[in-house]
Structures are given as structure tokens and as C-alpha cells.
Length: 41
Image (cartoon, rainbow, N blue to C red; front, side, top):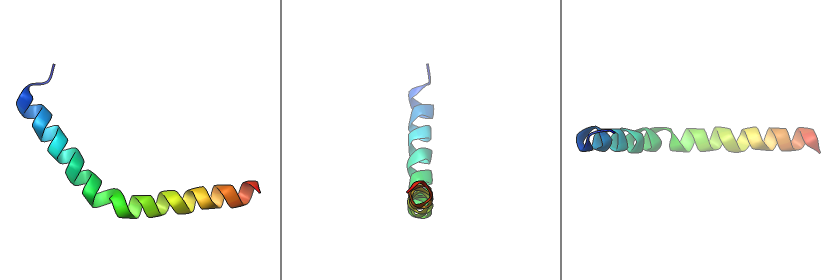
């Protein structure tokens, strides 16, 4: 089991990483899906 402290740190870090990478990652993910979709149709 993780201690309460390290659980908080992990949560904070994951939120920060989420905030940093959300927009570019979403854009890349959507364009990737679009390319796959276009290729399959």
C-alpha cells in the first residue's frame, strides 16, 4: 500500500502532466483517428 503522502504526490503529478499534455495529445489523437478512419473507408 502507498502511504497517504505519496498517493497525494502521484495524484498531483498526474493532474499536472494531464494539464501539460492534454491539448497537444488530444489533437494528435484526433488526427490519428481521422487518418485511420480515412484509410479504412
